[in-house]
Image (cartoon, rainbow, N blue to C red; front, side):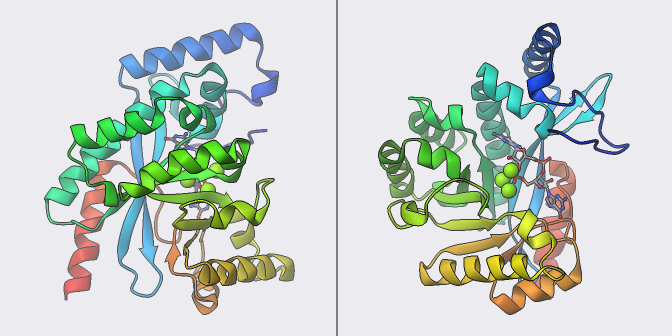
Length: 283
Ligand code: C2E
Ligand code: MG
Ligand code: MG
Ligand code: MG
């Protein structure tokens, strides 16, 4: 169920399950055209070192600049793209675009900047997934150590043995793997030490109530402690206030992402932000 987005985003349709078949066909056709017409954009949201305030990396988040409807957010079309398998083409486009843009920042001297890219189930389950990734990295001469891929628990649990093989190939090449929306999936915790995982991203629903609700605070506390024990990196998502930041820091959370530091923005604005972050670090 997708709720209203406010005035900066158009409500495309209210619920994937309720979309009529003719409407679905139209959206599907629109999405296909959107790729050809270059209506998609990659926006970047900074990921911040909680201790220094410097930018460690960016998460690539897709936006659809629809000629009539304005900006459409991923929650309104990624689920349908996933159902129709158009996601495979869309994800490959996101990866290419983000690799090209972030490579230019790396070449401009930000050699450590990390690029995080989201992948959905049918992309990861695609038999060519690993080869596609390697091919694109090579094509853009993008250092694998600078790439992090974000997967949800459900993607991994779907076929654990197979996933171990796939992800190990990526990890062997230096690509890091993050579990997105951690704590909201159905998974057991058993997979955590079987997979070459590098990062846990604490879901924003836990961060949101961290100071008002003891339960949320407890859950975040436990996730951070577990990540420390397993020597995993931890990113808290959805940080919107200074109080949340302070609290997360006090728990020992290394990295922060959220509106408090900035929303996702286009590439040209992002590199300005990265430049000024690097300058303030140097001075
Ligand atoms: P996600 O990967 O968990 O991304 C984080 C989402 O939280 C983003 O929404 C981001 O704009 C939003 N967010 C970040 N900080 C805050 C905050 O402080 N407060 C609040 N309320 N929200 C915050 P967005 O960009 O609308 O993306 C939604 C989801 O769509 C993503 O969740 C991801 O699952 C999916 N998605 C986005 N881009 C792609 C893509 O290129 N490929 C795939 N497969 N999925 C994507
Ligand atoms: Mg993500
Ligand atoms: Mg998330
Ligand atoms: Mg999500």
